[in-house]
Image (cartoon, rainbow, N blue to C red):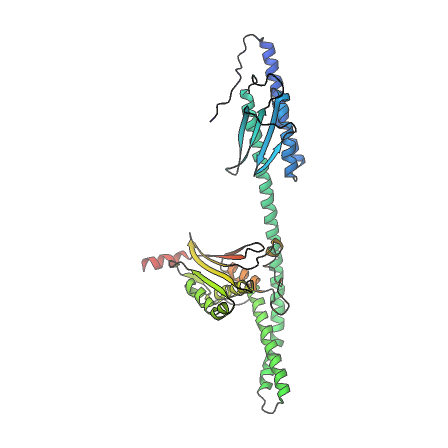
Length: 390
């Protein structure tokens, strides 16, 4: 590490009064600098680039030789320079440590501007000052990050409240529709058995039955989303559940030119869950992945254990999704598919089932880079201990 040349504070040739006045003057400049940084931070909190650019301009005047000083702030790969910036081998530097990570640094240079620069040295107090500036910048970064996290949390709470409201509405609508729909379906199936019906009437009844069954499936999804259907939980081998779901799509994968890559952990513990509902989760995610690759691609299904959680990821090499779509994929009835190809309930149902199992689901995607859904389900400690002892 380069040793910082430090100007000795002992000056026998200078009177004590002049030395005290000089030290006081430098101290006033340091405090003025720190106060200015604090004011800039409060005034321009919502404008990060403006904050750091304004801060870097107030740094050189705080140094002993402001006419020869230049400053630079580097934060997260961005650089901000004072208006008179030049690099020099004479510099002071301090790292910006925020959230226990180095996010950049603050640097002050004595640059070549006329004669006499070679003899200029940094004071010990200036080393303390640049470290204080770095701490203030770190505080600005941490505060901005905390505000961003608070905003994200508020959005999540609003989203959760909206989903709860929609769930209550959906449950009410589903229950109201169930009875008349069952009557329509029952009478249509009963009439279909009449031996003297003309073929045209038979065709029309078949259409009524098909539409009624489709509507009933939508109602089932609504009830699942609203968590109004009973669950039947027991010990589940998740690898078997995923394999059963994949078995339903073997022909479709081959026909669509999609390569299936299985990466199952053989050490998965049993989990306490509703196997039927988890199978529906996997089926819905597989359907989405296949539909995202109409011209073929690679489908990778991975299972693993991470701590006390079971992980399952389903990744495709399809067209991917934009940030705007990602923000809405779990909203009921939102869909990017054609009118006759999707109801917008598949992913909300997946979210509802995973959440009801005290799990989480996340997605990573960008346009042209496919998508990966990752499910995390808690492992039942009692089952793990019983399995170990057995």
